[in-house]
Length: 582
Figure (cartoon, rainbow, N blue to C red):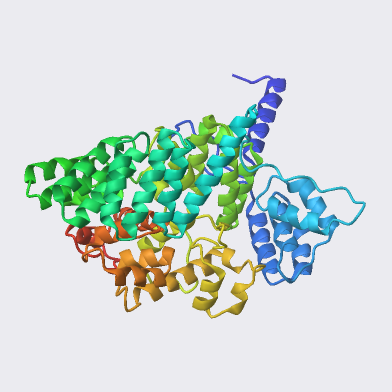
């Protein structure tokens, strides 16, 4: 049949419009959702130009960069180009006019908050303020203001002061002073029952970490009989204190009640059930041991759950298939500027910035687009967006995507990998969730969250100490220095290749680990050592890093000797396995 000429023009116009939505060259939309399709924004000539522009700016050749910029057909990444120029630490001093123009045109792009602060500092008198950055996430509606009476305000103020004092005493490992403050506050009825129970369990934990098991057990028992989250924490501390006292029956009872109290929290429930099994084994009650290990292994993506599953001889099964990403999903997000920039950045090899762009898209988007954004993050292999999106979807019980929870990034450190990638990724996932621009409140930077002083020591480069240095944002350097620091810790005379101690030292500091080892209140028991670490952050860190390691070993088809060692009650010693398959 012959198509009438007007309709032919309409069809051609529609086809051009469809191609413009995708941007740049691409294959026709596949009919089958499972068929692979090209994702592209930039033409090959612009890809090459952008790569040369970024390279010229890296060596501060602004004239060459400008010459290349004039040849661009698509200026979609000009905001990123100018950002790197204007924020250069020493080779370019940007004017207020340049910074203000950047904010006017690119306020939704990564780095806008940092550039805005610089613009505000350089703003001359009488000049209009720069445009504000676009928020990096959806803003919740404002909460209604509470109308409080003077009596209620006084109570809230007194409660805040008491809790601040208690927290300070606990931070300084002063359980006696914290307890005294807590009982005084209780006499004044400052805390509700649930809050009081929680604080009581924290004081009990402080006594336990100070080595006073009798006092810890006494307060933990009171907390365990209370309400709220303190019930779990009280039974948990009570179980540990009774274990260290050698009272296996009392310990088992506390841990079993902790298992019930934490039934909705997989990590806590598996930990309590595992320790209850240990206590029942010490009491020579094998029939209870199998039941409790089975309960711990139910949550077999957790630290203690994995160990319990290995002790029971069960397989720990992951699915490494990538999430589906059909054409219709891409169409729902392909018009978003951040998506197009992320695709373009990935085309020119700037995975770090592409990841941040897509993560911002996720944070600003409604839930109905999240599945599509996760699919694109997986297709482009943007690790930070994958982890954050997959974790959130898992918490919402929408789906579990193992390949996104444990992505394998394309980063390569300067000089290559000298330690197994599974080990490096395990640390990196816990440290920064693969966010190249991550900066902690303490000042740790980049993928491996290195403190500038540590990086300077390991890299023998004083310039890394500078607060204005951005060198640690470079993934290749950051991973190289982090890898070297892990090697340094593994070779320490006290670590002796012990990955558990190395993880504790990476987070809590080698000096602290040496002190904890010298204290010797853990009977050469790796599990008790973990639970006697006085820093909660470090306790959690160790279990998360080791769990990450086992997942990455499995993803790479490797055996898991560190998991086998702990399942046998032994310390996990690092064994290089890259290029070795299970």
